[in-house]
Length: 335
Image 1 (cartoon, one colour):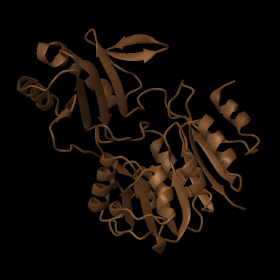
Image 2 (cartoon, helix red, strand yellow):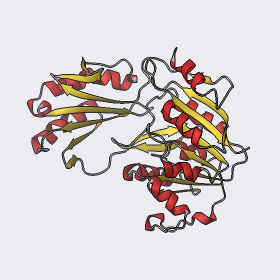
Image 3 (cartoon, helix red, strand yellow):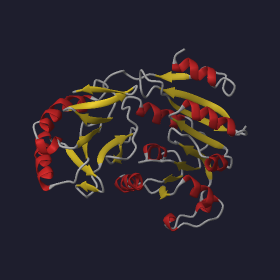
């Protein structure tokens, strides 16, 4: 039984219609890649075994072409390869690449100087990370564009961003198509604003919540650079959001008055572990729930707890071909 058939079967008690699946190319789709470094090779782990490689067919072309060139330059330098244990890549749709080199040693001046030469040679941005230190200290943002209006969006080297370049626009379009009678939107786990920015075109106001400092900085930068006046965001945990709706005040709200919103929808895009008990309780306050999930197992677990809400529409996106993972986009409403 493939993963699409299995999900249709597992969710049949909650949704009886056939679920549309959006497929991805099996190669050249992944714009965010993380590798270990060992024995002068990139390393991936599968079934408790190490896989050594010089290139990665799944990566977008800009990363795939860069990988063997960078690896050769690293291996030619004793200073750069010494105690290097991880190499991460991110690429924008314009093929701008951000590389992160992570070390089990202190960052020396010699290391910085040699990596700067590679940075200039390859025309990329490179961040060096080590225990309790980072170079350069200033934030480096990778800029991209979303929606037909080309809204600017930013990510840093360790912020979450959807990795499948081919399916991301389709996911954004699907989420937008689910919206009926929009007023104000509240969004939890907003990340750098992938859905926040695009949905700001549909809702009167958007209040976005995220607990990661770097992601909130990316979103604030995007709000300013896109000249958007109908988005507010705050750094709060899921537990604090429930407390917020119960009347607790937070200095981090920076003058935002939750009582002035007229929320017609709430959007949640949690990590693979799914929704917490506090968030499940919070969702019961809202008529319309847009639930985006990267785990069929926790998605099914959670919707069973939302007893008053029924799935109105759902589709799946094969973000990671040839794996068991699926991305789910759905809307649940109280009839």
